[in-house]
Image 1 (cartoon, rainbow, N blue to C red):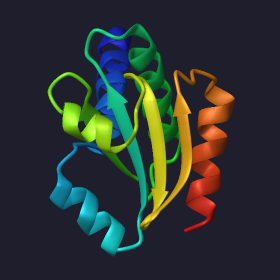
Image 2: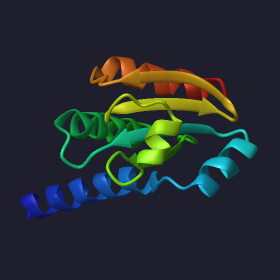
Image 3: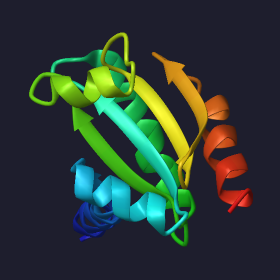
Image 4: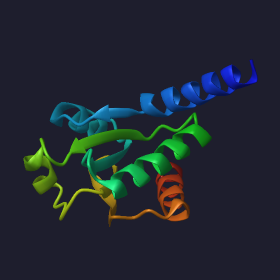
Length: 127
């Protein structure tokens, strides 16, 4: 019974964090910009271990901050090359933060939980 409850709790945590993630489209990005939202662009690749570490940290942030208003848009590095180029991502594992039309953060291969949490928290406070 205890393991079943832990499994359900874990599934709920993953589900709530995943709900904040949306595949990138130009329309979603432009709409979020027009609404002056804080937007996290996560340029990832399924095969990338650094991306997996970043994703885990990002999910932890949204789990710890369930009322976050940050819109997470994920760009697939392999299938959305034009957008990776548009965002000047030198490689997968690039994170960008926008406040409306203004880019306020850019990092590559950042896996420090403290730095990612601070970046997102600071961006949220700017909102």
